[in-house]
Length: 273
Ligand SMILES: Nc1ncnc2c1ncn2[C@@H]1O[C@H](COP(=O)(O)OP(=O)(O)O)[C@@H](O)[C@H]1O
Ligand SMILES: [Mg+2]
Image 1 (cartoon, rainbow, N blue to C red):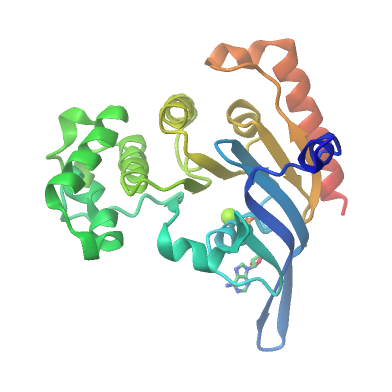
Image 2: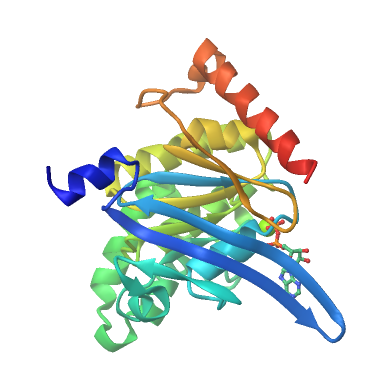
């Protein structure tokens, strides 16, 4: 038996794109210290949709920023296929989507969607290519008729669609999403969840998604990592076996209801510390 095979049998995946290895984070401001994360270890296989689910303040955003190389952990390391993430992202940047779409109000939709390409690929500037890529993703996000609109003319959901198109237009291999739909109403959120799954399926991008919504994590993910209250630790790794493609009515199936109950039970346990 090969080593890879026996590692796989032991539940250790050798095809991880991202490996978070014993990451702890302590913030120090003057005399105040906040112990935000405690020895987090997890893996994200290529092409998968992984969620971090945990209560507010448990360090989800901090962990995502460490994974994205925006913040250096106090302890531990994040690897991208065996290379420290801080090095790897210089060659190929990650895509980020935050709760706030952060569009530039004076730029039209299309010009907002090309913005990151202009920054990331400034040494290889190719205006036609940037526009073509941005258009492609805006159309996939259903915004083909709004290329010339200004952000103020769009609904909250449409603005977040622009932010997603902007992130994907740089062709990231990893998309990091931090409560991207947290400010949207439930109906808009459902639609965006569906469209995100379609987009994920088409691009093959690997997604790490932060949420405190149990339903959202269950509906979207291949694997949900449940975190405890601060300091955030990984309480459980829950694989989601609900078949794909997933439609909204999957949420009424016994399997989904059972999964939601399991995740809620874990979160409650994690709150007790
Ligand atoms: N730059 C920072 N300086 C000091 N404390 C911080 C900083 N960033 C986050 N924290 C603290 O770390 C903890 C985790 O924050 P965060 O990662 O934003 O949690 P979550 O995203 O799960 O709500 C919180 O107590 C927060 O106040
Ligand atoms: Mg957060």
